[in-house]
Length: 269
Image: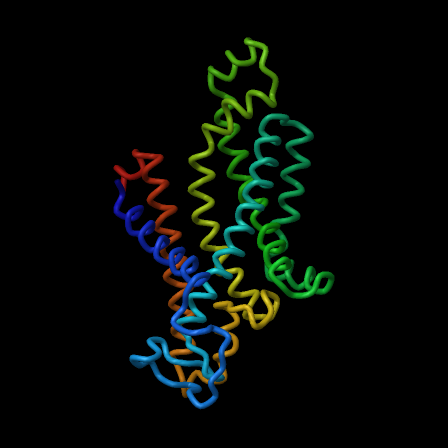
């Protein structure tokens, strides 16, 4: 088993575990203010210190993991499902339908999630729904291109011709033969794109387009800590490291899954 898969799975499991644990327990109430204890450095009572209004940073990081991971997973799942559907449809139909689908994907790909969130924010207002929609829309063309390229290779196989001769239509062939064979590539991409979605969510929250207070968010923690960078650097380090470690874990997980599903790649490296 690839080492990157083991390490990535371990890191991801820790971060997911912290997110789930935060729904049941945190060292302190992540929304409880204590002005007297504001901007305290890390110590035995507050392992990650306190923020500008005296909240326990570790508790906010744990609660923010639920928010950031939840938005990232939902957005990636929505974008992955829609993109994969478009990709396999384009590969199955070909011709004009394929050109229309890929042209539509090109238009979507031209709008990064930040710009999409600004446009959606003007219509919907900032919030989790805006972030999920913006990131999910940005993920659609990524999965559409990957699934289309993989599906085209499957459609050229001999067993697809045999399935046609057996009287199976395009929908049945896609469901029974194409999707199962491209699923490993989609799963790998889901892990990698979830890491990118976490970065996008942090960027949106940093700009005020993500979840609204008092819901914890790693990106908003970075935004709010700018003023106190010199006096309390732990306010920046804690959420920054949380984002970096989570994205690293997901990227390692994706690389490990790619090596596992493609042994030739792992041997070449």
